[in-house]
Image 1 (cartoon, helix red, strand yellow):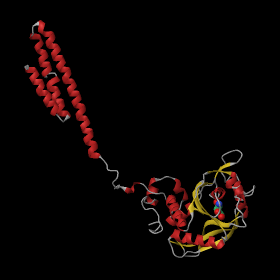
Image 2 (cartoon, protein in one colour; image 1 turned 180 degrees about the vertical axis):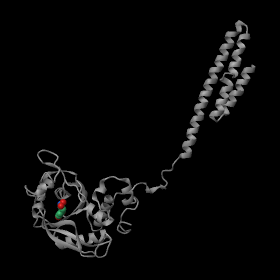
Image 3 (cartoon, helix red, strand yellow; image 1 turned 90 degrees about the vertical axis):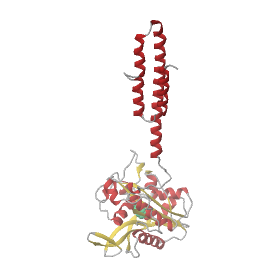
Length: 355
Ligand code: DAH
């Protein structure tokens, strides 16, 4: 083995055991650098006899290319290993519980929908849903709303076509129709969801939330409605005693109809529910009109029932002391951080709804 071959072998061993890029760079400069091993060999060319020059140069060039390849592969190997080590170090066990749960918050409207669903599910109501884009029939006609009713006015309703046949639902009541048309009585459902009306001020937004309730069965009367709402309001506000009054009202889809107020008083500008002599309207309700049952192919001599419609946003404002409805929909992260709820603290009746 020639002198140069011996040296190259030594370098190959050094490269092989090298584990750092800087170390490899320094070896590379020793071998392939300006004053490195290979260039020193090339310099010997001038002293060689002509007939040896060619094979000598070819040999050195071969060694040079071979070493360049070795350096390149080693560099890739070292960099790959660095990445693998880094990935190993940073590996996350996704099956472990998260340490930082406080990142996201549940919006008060979602929280209140969960709370209400939980309260009604305790007494046998199931949850139904309907689309935001509704047809005129389900939203008005099937609900016994006369042709010239003010609610059908363009100023209130967002119509989606010239013929005024498709619209953004103005209330969740069409879910009553959808539910009754697709099944057979008895029915016992609630339907939360988005509703739309052309209106905007401190207590109205063009999109808001309602919750519809419907119970149809044999021998259902107004007493059942009263008992149900009484239970709901007590559970929702998490108080033992409430003041509630039914005021006669009118809705095309119920007969008789009523609006329900709850009693409250103000203390340092805070609303205290269940005491005092002030009244606040929170929902509309009544006994389902026989025409509505007829439109849903239900014999009103055999079945009757009650329905109610609650403004969800209003309940959220009352329960959690939020005084501008518009702030609900401004998507202000600071607001959500303040009024939002812990996503893991899901409301349940046995643990308390809003702890
Ligand atoms: N749909 C009514 C509204 O948006 C609320 C309502 C009143 C719903 C009485 C009902 C009801 O189911 O029985 O103003």
